[in-house]
Amino acid sequence: MTNSFEQGKNKPRFTPHSSLPTPLDPFLESPARLIEPNWCDRPSTQLAPDLLGCTLYRQLSSGMLIRATIVETEAYAPGDPACHAYKGLSRRNAAMFGPPGHSYVYLIYGMYHCLNVVSESTGIGSAVLIRALELNAIPSHLTPKQTAKPHRIAAGPGKLCRALAIDRTLDGILYHPDNGLWLVHRPRTIPKNQIVQTTRIGITKAADKPWRWYLKNSQSVSKLAA
DNA sequence: AAAATGATTATG
DNA sequence: ATAATCATTTTC
Image (tube, rainbow, N blue to C red; front, side, top):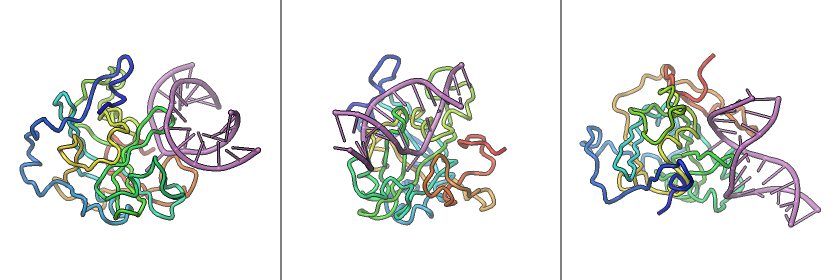
C-alpha cells in the first residue's frame, strides 16, 4: 500500500498499519464509543452537525497517534448540484455510493485532498465533508511554517488531510482502528447554541443551501468569523 | 488578485 | 484530443 506522502522529496513516509497494537486511549476503553456505520446511515444534513465535537483518530505507520476534534463540517446530499454524486456513479466518487461509516477521499485542485464521512445506505450518494479539526498535538512531519500557528494547522479541508497524511489510498475504507483512521463519539454533549449553521464554502452550485456547521468558539474553523 | 498543480469531466 | 472545471491554499 503506497501513499503519496511517501513519494517525492521532503515528503514523509506513512502507511496505515494494521499490525500495530490498538493504541491505548481513554475514549477507546469503552468500545461503545467507536462510531460505527449504522450511526452514519442517515441524511448528511443530520450527520454533519452531529459529527461536531466527535474525535477523529489517525494512526501512522510510525505508530504516532493523532487525535483531533471535528470543529467544522458540510453536508452533500442526493439531488444537490454541489454534491460529487449528483451526476451519478463514477470511479472517483464510488465511495460516496458505498456503505455509510466509510471514507470518501478525493484530490482537489491537483494538490490537496479532502476527507468525507459517507452517509446513508449503499446506493445513495451522500457524504459529510470534514472541513476543520483541532489537533491534540503537532504532527512531526509538518514544516515549521505549517505549524507556526498551532490552532490553524488543520483549519481547512485540504490542510487537515495534509496534517493527518490522508490521501486517496484511504478512499473507501471503513473508519476503524484497523485502518489507521477512526471516529469516536463526543466525550460530552454540546449545547445547541454552540453550533453555528451557515452556507457552504467554495462552491458555485447550490451555494445558498445552509449546510455548513461549525463550533461557535473554535479558533480552528476554516474561516474565522469577522 | 492570482499562481500552483493534476485528476476528472465535458466537448469536438 | 483538447479544454474546462474543481467541496483549496498560499503567496504576491
